[in-house]
Amino acid sequence: MVVMTEERPSWTDERLDDLSGKVDNGFARTDRRVDESARELRGEIQGSAREVRAEVQELRVEMNAQFDKQAARLETRFDGLEGRMDRFQQTLIVFLGGLVAALIAALVATLLALFAA
Image 1 (cartoon, rainbow, N blue to C red):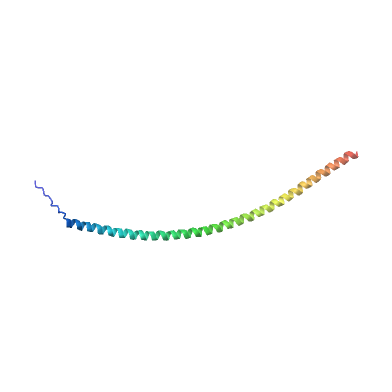
Image 2 (cartoon, rainbow, N blue to C red):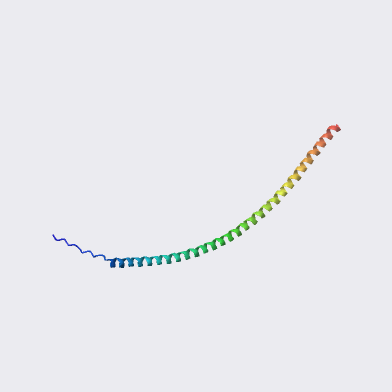
């Protein structure tokens, strides 16, 4: 049986320096690409943040307008309710005043009838 062995290349200082230079260049290219991508991403995020802030501001304006409209509507309804309550109170006072007057008249009539007999 014959076993073949591969001859391994020897790593000289010069070859190791070349490999080190290639690795350094590869990392430098990768660093530049990562930095460039990070700058682009930051720009996109800042642009998106500006858009979100603008949309939130528009939403605030819309919501405030709706709240103002609802507040005015409620105030109108409460004013109407206050008017109805005032009229009810006046009616109640007139009714009770008439009832008290009728009771007093009945009492006076009863007293007169008792003393007249």
